[in-house]
Image 1 (cartoon, rainbow, N blue to C red):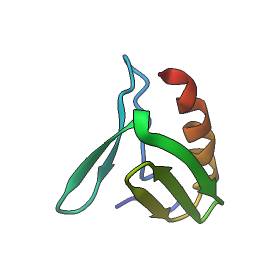
Image 2 (cartoon, rainbow, N blue to C red):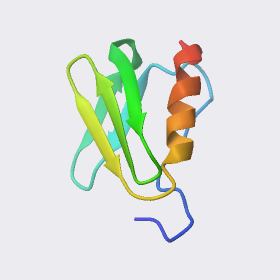
Image 3 (cartoon, rainbow, N blue to C red):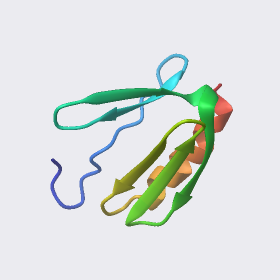
Image 4 (cartoon, helix red, strand yellow):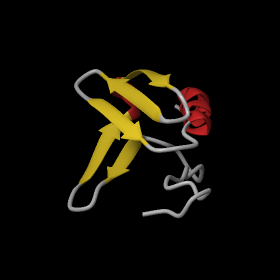
Length: 76
C-alpha cells in the first residue's frame, strides 16, 4: 500500500533487467521481458501485454510507469 503521491512501484536499474516482477498481497509473478509485446494506458490504468500474459495495473500517476516501460525495451 502506498500513500497519496507515493509511487507504489519501483524500477531497479542495477544490473541486467531480465523480467517484470509483479508483487501482489499473497503471490509474486516474474514475467520475462523477452515476451514483452507492448504497453498501453493512461495515468489511471496501464496494461502490459506479454506473449502469454496481460497485466493490468490500476491506480494513479501511472503515466510515468508507461515511460519506464518504454525505456525498459532498450535494457535488453
